[in-house]
Image 1 (cartoon, rainbow, N blue to C red):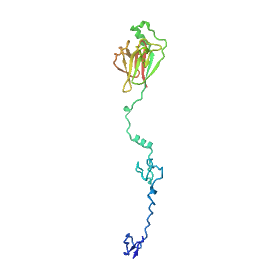
Image 2: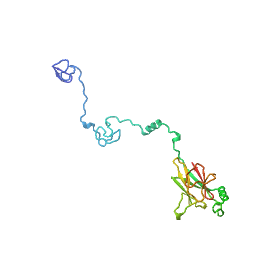
Image 3: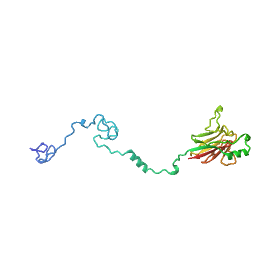
Image 4: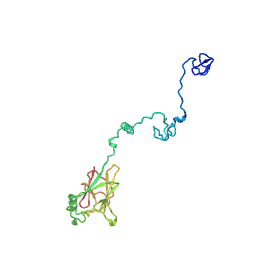
Length: 233
């Protein structure tokens, strides 16, 4: 009987009848198997190197990563966002919203006052031009801005209060309304005021309750001398 390199006895003197190896060949070294399955279990409190989830076994229950395999190579989020941003097509300039702010500047206008006096407006004889009227600036914000003179007894508290000093008696308590437009501009509505609302050098006042679009630099005249200039920045 012949003996193969693995120690099997065989009646065939060329190849082992048990394992098929050549008689007289070199023995094959077999690597030792793990002592037990417990050798593959992660230590208590271990976390997945791929997603950070707690490990209860060799394979992560969240992402399936093998804890015995090398950790995956991660790409910084900033780099990913930079690549996405670089690959994204540019936004057309005409579609980029323009951040604008509007301001209403209130002052006394002598030329307008003289025109009102020349037309002999209501109670013209009892009105005098104020000797001092500093500019007042009102940032425009929200959907609408009321213009008038405060009257607590009537519960009227306009956003642009022209009560003074100096007080323009030709301004109605609730004279006009500025309305914000979807494109960021403003329009004005005369609220059927006693003395009307004039835009720039137009000969006729606005029709009551009909919105009128305004542009940067437009001048709104109300009362006996009040000029409101709208500026966009």
